[in-house]
Length: 187
Image (cartoon, rainbow, N blue to C red; front, side, top):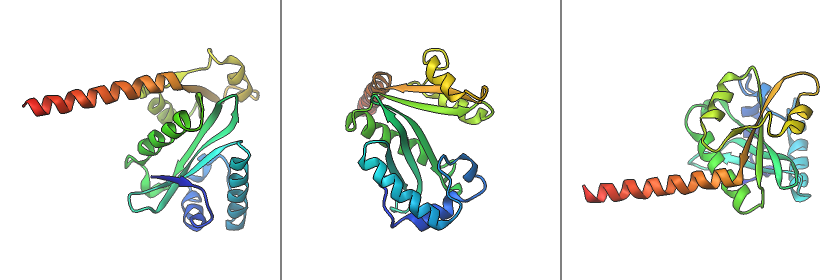
């Protein structure tokens, strides 16, 4: 589902990223294929320096369909950025990619907190984030970060995914799956 970034998928990713329903929401925009290649090279080098973690999202056949990233890593925390190509919206890939990425970040990469900044006008994304039991609105609890994001006015809401809350969710989900399997065996 996820793989380290490389140059082999650049053509497909660039074509997917430039769709008008996707492009405005991509953090690092490339306005030409050559610029996308250069940015991919910079991304790979930044990951080698420990500044970010970036993965290509793959579909069930191994084809690239988007990217998921943790940017601005500092003090075991960073900002989530993800995008999927338009043909893959609403098909469940985002959740699968995030689950795999969060597992890697929290349990392999030593990340303790994942932040998400969501534009206040993006009600759909805010509602989606607020539905997740491990996401916390952090405008007040992380006021200094919130103010840094909104230095030019109230543009973003700040959300936080703490490792302990995510772990509790995973443990509860696993227990629920075990209970459901046990119940089915009894029936």
